[in-house]
Image (cartoon, rainbow, N blue to C red):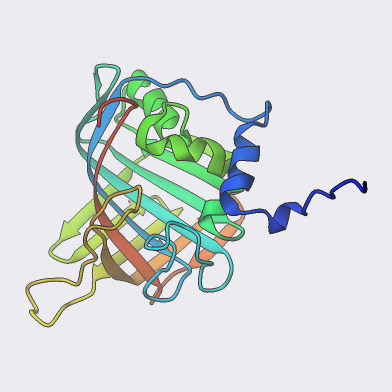
Length: 236
């Protein structure tokens, strides 16, 4: 009887490819711990409006087949192993070569310069997926950490607009899409998106990234604003 040939990796179901990466002994080790974050995340990416990645749980290809994006997060309340994270801002630069769910993300993190040593290290563990819980998915989606540094991360909110400034490295501003009722922005409710079930689609107004060899401009491109409530394993 002829041996069955193993199908090429790129033809395997996404879930099976992820399982294989999780079994890789060289991947970062997850060390689940106790943490919680409440706040708001907003982002701008290279997709045309509206980005298909979140609503499809990363299974649909980005508009141009790859995803380049920045994330900004304002933490209103939260902690890492008892150390307060309240009032801290964080930004991420993320470069994804294909579908979000297929992994191979390259990520750089910028953590509020006012964070204590424990808060800084805790946020890096949370955002790399090592702390488990909601962001544990990052542990097998992220293949390379480009860098992590303390920065002055400035986040500004003005009605439907959100703005982030990380020196000259990330300067972005997005605005929610207005609905029929001008006082109520368009939203997607009850989604299965791991970041949060409510998504407010947005459009990039001014949006530039210049760091780690990346020079991106997302003006007119897709954005999202997402209320977040994340926690470590076993909390929800």
